Length: 187
Image (cartoon, rainbow, N blue to C red):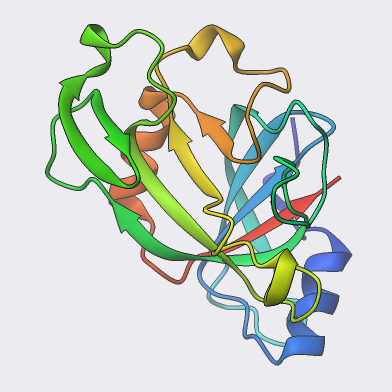
């Protein structure tokens, strides 16, 4: 288990400094090779270019079965600094199934293979030429953190680029994290 107070990866801070992005109060760090995501809360008393964060929780996730990569139509999980650009599904029933970010009218119990369920965090890349713009644009690639019906696949690469999370983990995160929350995806 990580220490209670620790710093997120150095790459996160370097990307923030390079882009002029101020680290926010919340941070999600997805580690692709470990198929995990960690939630951090900034310690308000610490300021500066590398403020301290308190580790709060670890989640088992699934990232792309095709590996990591930035380019459109590769179905790979993009790396680097992102932010939550939109939250979709608030107020809809638990188990809601989505297609093209719209509620289909079913719950996952009626569609046991539903690829997108419960809630959606739509990610936007913040690094021009790397995960923002042109053929590498995370937002245009429709990369999300979202739930799914097939939760037994969590913990191993299984998605087509998105980050899958269990309903039990996703629903509290959805209520807690605001649009604009920074997300660091590292190998």
